[in-house]
Length: 199
Image 1 (spheres, helix red, strand yellow):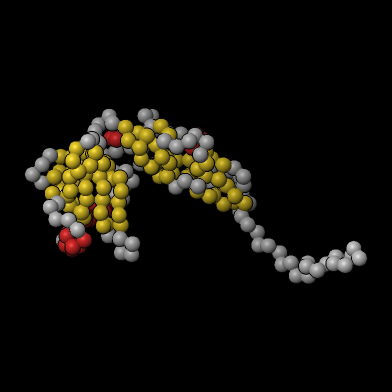
Image 2 (spheres, rainbow, N blue to C red; image 1 turned 90 degrees about the vertical axis):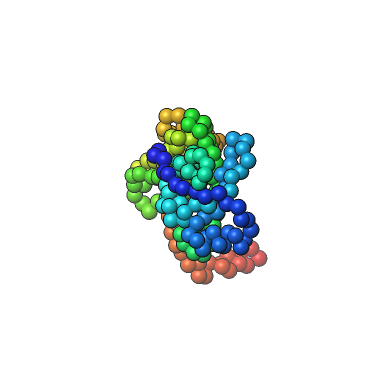
């Protein structure tokens, strides 16, 4: 995965008022933490960060003004509950090349289910895995070709890239195929039949 470079400025003001001012200036408050060092409070350019976060588990090279470059991955992103595309806060985890991290990787599907109106149910939208921080897979792909109602795909059935292992039980159900629910027939007159037969 390619690194995305982004600039940051140290943050010295805290509280709701300071956060509002930061967002009004098209910047996002955040914190960089990990590796036993003191958390570093920063602000990041809102648009650049939003674009970078379009890639799940993106690897960021953060250049802090007056400091050194830090390699991080997003661990928690708070988005505005109503305004689409507005970030409220971001937690960034320090990582090193060769270091293992636990992340959730999006699950993609390919192929078509068996004919007959079957439906695919996602029990997990993302697969928890342990992988090298600088080689996080963007996604994992699962073939659902020809699967019929009752079929279940478990975590252990998914092929992972080299160096990536499951961070969830092998038997955890990830996807299952269910039969489309037919409309229940009207049951008019069904009730009351047979009453009094055993007098």
